[in-house]
Length: 443
Image (cartoon, rainbow, N blue to C red; front, side, top):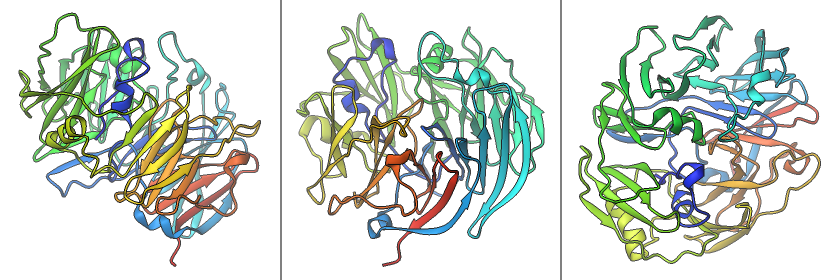
């Protein structure tokens, strides 16, 4: 788990972003806008009692063997591409009132065209005043695609009207969609019913949603309960709608944000935008049970990469108070624009130098997101864009530091990749429409 960033208007250049860094993998749902596509993944697995179902997948260790093509196909060039666990959707003329969305069923053998729809995506490029986060497509549950107030059945293309208003802000946590108005009145919905599962007021929800990097949220499964953090200030039980109240014992707070540990909660709060305090809480919330005294000396440009698993409060304390990095797979350095320059893989002590992808064919060459397999044997580096999810541009062998080649696609020519699952990647070339599915090599 990674501690979240503060809202943009209170986030300092250092400190809090150092805590932020990569997060949790799992069987996931995701939505991400990327340089050559908009990518969505799907899948859920609740067999474990404590599990973080994050809105992205991390690579498995098997990618250190290299990448092998499973199949290759061609779709429209210069399109935005969405992928789920069993479908690929292309969006032609994205950002206009005359966008064509074509859906393909995808399996181990390739693509089969399923349906086509016309839609208006001209509003998707309106970034608004507070943060450059345009509206995106969101995956709701297993088979529903949200675009504004229109719902698409991914398998059939059938459409329906969403139960929320156009002026409400929407986030999705697994199979729960939460819509909040400007007064922070929020309602939760399931795919099966237009009737709210619950309605309540969530602390600073509307403002937090508008400033957050992603509107596709991690689901925190804790035994029989599931939680999500809406915006920065509201931890909510997805079944009951009850908010976990966390008291911040600090005067003059300029900004604060909640994070979830496997056995409780954390809050990072700042009073002067330069210094901060980290408080820990039990699972039931209330007053803090302790405070983490940060003594770990990372430079301003250094960030941790957390292992893809839930993290106990004690492990956060061990890291930040005692400099215990024993369960970190990697850490990385950034330049003055927060673009990743080097990744140090801690188990192997390999150093990865991230190449500069700047060029007219690469829409987003500043790579800000680092993901790691559980043991650090595979590392991906990708763009942040409007969400911090599972899209990547480059993959590396964490043991040797060498770059892993995805034959047939070149990120230097604008190709982008999505981690569909731990052992599956789909890559797309906007230049010619080439679409390739990869699995780890068998050597």
